[in-house]
Image 1 (cartoon, one colour):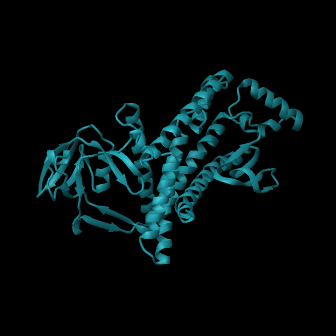
Image 2 (image 1 turned 30 degrees about the vertical axis):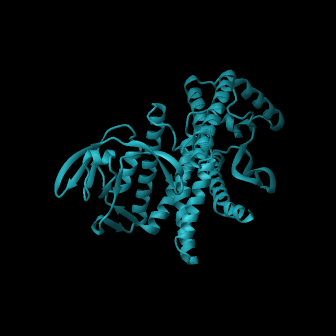
Image 3 (image 1 turned 135 degrees about the horizontal axis):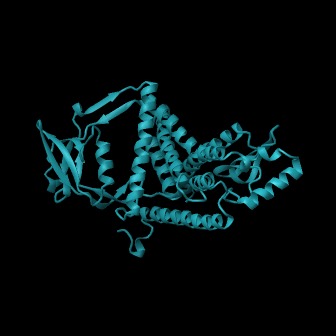
Length: 405
């Protein structure tokens, strides 16, 4: 039992907490640095939550804290009045009077809520921006270290009775375009198929120098993935296989690696937006959404893969480092996207309120903020519950309820 717990702790919980705390700390550091650049008064910057293990107050009066619960962190601006951090006009007037009474006229100009609207919007947007910047740095390092490998999308075989078999795919076909868009990597085929459940997809294939158009409609199937667990994803029953001539590899200089990192971020954001849009239009069930359990399992999966790939300590350390660079970059992109959702408890919701204030020239009324905050909290809680349910389903914990078999 202790051995199993130690394995879980070492390969799943610890990597998850390390990655999450690091990424959220960078997110909060984005808010902090831009706020300080605009002269905003800050009370505290905390890594972790709960009771402080260590704290120090600097000459600017900012408490730097390391707390015992490693689930991220936060930055607390002076004068925050409520959980939404967007007080209405009455709250602003009350805060201004209190600050002036305590520190004298003009002191309120150092408080976040009395900064120009464009500065507040930049401070709020700096958190998600820091996540994308972190991902860009990590991916640039990753591509600089290992370069770029492209596997041409060559067909190896098809599953009997599958959409791919019905469409007429044959061994040796080279997929050169999907829905008229040229492609060069087998990953693009997988991504396009997964995002097209129930929609006909046109594949342009090169067969012995002739180009043919084959159409297949991806169908959702249950698969057991080593990292993601049991998931329902769209497939057409196509197995990719590569010849030696289909594999290309090149070293990337820092500029090329930077460009590849930007391209990867754009692809990830676009794929996520497409998937979320398909959920809202009823074309996807949301099975691929991950909550904390799913992310933790993925962290454990990539850790085990990196450790077991080669027993040599030096190789293992290098592989682990590169694996975590990639994993942290993807999680950072995800956190950046989630925080930009227009939900009042998130950065995107704050930006929505500030956009209203910029147009109406007054803050959102307290009653509207309160309703928005409650609805946003309910939406966020519902999303987390849904994602957690997905995580548990992927672990097959609800088979006895008649779930996935």
